[in-house]
Amino acid sequence: MAARAVPRSEPDGIYVQLTIDGELFTVTQRDDGASYDFTWDSGPRDSYGFTVARSDGAAMSTSDLERHARSFLAQVDPSTGFIGDPDS
Image: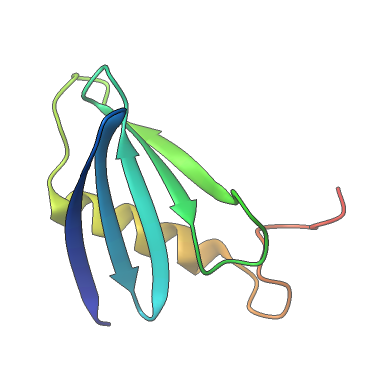
């Protein structure tokens, strides 16, 4: 269950690259400071990922981001690389 975070600075938000169990995610913090877009860089399709947000408007820690990435991966069907039916 290895996890590694590498912060990167970009002009349009804060980027963090996470490696979770061998899978690579790029995480972008939106301008509101409490929403994050996860792109699954090592996933089956370009731009495949998910978004999470805190209802209280607080920023998430790296541990929070890692937990959300792990939760996402736990839902993925290993035979297809997708959540649910990839053709729907």
